[in-house]
Length: 112
Image 1 (cartoon, helix red, strand yellow):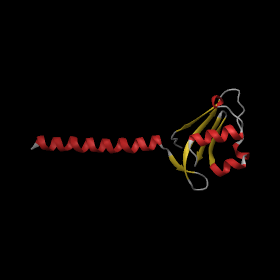
Image 2 (cartoon, one colour):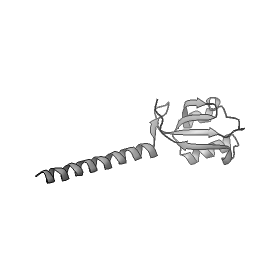
Image 3 (tube, one colour):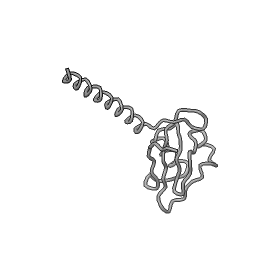
């Protein structure tokens, strides 16, 4: 009888572990949030390389259509955007004439 209970306990722990892994992987791979307008968005960290002037996204009217600033750092921003990372790269390259080696865009979850 104890053998059967032990197997059931291991099975329950294993299933719970799989469910937890699936939950966390979805949370880390697609850190979903909402932007300032209440739209579904993804958190992006935009970091500019040393020597590159950080553009002022707060004064860019076209940026307000695609996202909102969560917080600002000396070398970049954390934003919530409705665009994919590829579209964001296109935005920075066309709007600010930046080259891909002058900045990085990455996703991530942050806790406040």
